Length: 146
Image (cartoon, rainbow, N blue to C red; front, top):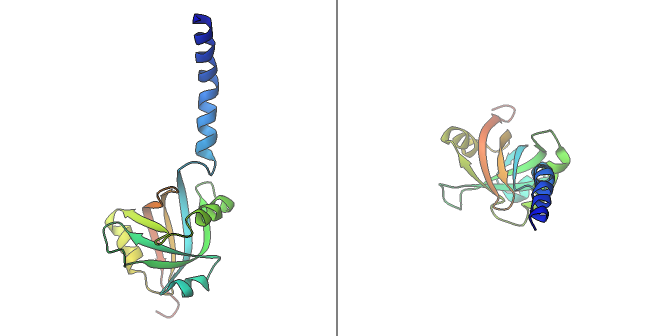
């Protein structure tokens, strides 16, 4: 009996860390660093005209009616993997809002105030199951001519 427990402990020690690493590194992990670039739009229909997917971003401390619509041009994980980024965007489709943004006031204020037609790049950690997006940074490029 003692030998069986010892072998089981050895097997867990050898296999456990690799199994955890594989789950976190794959799309199956719950939390992913996600960078999204797109164009701010006034409506869902307008966002669908720009990029490959339309997403809505709500804000944790604001009214659920206040949404920012974006036509997503690029989504990539921390390692630059755009395939995983597209898959994350696909996972959050079918909900409104698609993402619920939270985090520091400055980046969230920039995102809320981004004018329609501006290009926005958002960086943060997304929880793919809860669709929470902990926003770290927001870069806004106003539309040409404004």
